[in-house]
Structures are given as structure tokens and as C-alpha cells.
Image 1 (cartoon, rainbow, N blue to C red):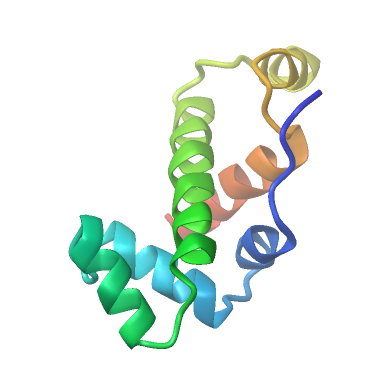
Image 2 (cartoon, one colour):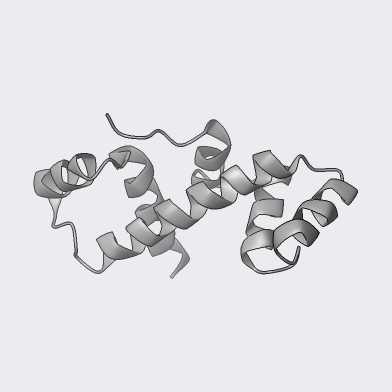
Length: 105
């Protein structure tokens, strides 16, 4: 069974971005430091660190896979879908990220 992305992550894929998701991207950019300091800074800014760090994990995992799809690692069409699902990824979420990446180019 493939892991499903949270609605909040999918919201970003479709063009919206929640406050929590903005914080997750800020974490990826190093704006909230790391380790215990990151947790402290997130709390100080009014976030729930566990929620933000879960989003960071999803973004890291799925954006890397989407980049691999763009590079051709998972093939095309039905073969791509099968390869992604066999690897435990949510095909629709990955494909939406790929489409979003291609639009932003």
C-alpha cells in the first residue's frame, strides 16, 4: 500500500500554500536552524513543531522522487505508475509534483 500525502501537502501541489507549509519550506531553506533550536524557534513562531517537521519529511521524500521522475528514472505512462506504486509512492501526488515542477520551469 502506498503512503498518501497529507491534504496540506497536496494543497501546495495544486497551487495553494498554507501557513504550515510555508514554515516547512522555510525549514528546508534553513530559516529555522536545526535540532533543538529549530523546535524552539518553530514553537516561538506559533507552530507545532511535529506538524511542521512531518511536512518537511513529506516534501523531502516526494520532491526528490519527482525530480527522479523528470530525469526518467521511473519510465513513462503505465510503467511509471507501476514503478512508483511498487516503490511505495502515491503516484497521483508524485505526478502532480512533476507537473508543477514543469510549469515552474
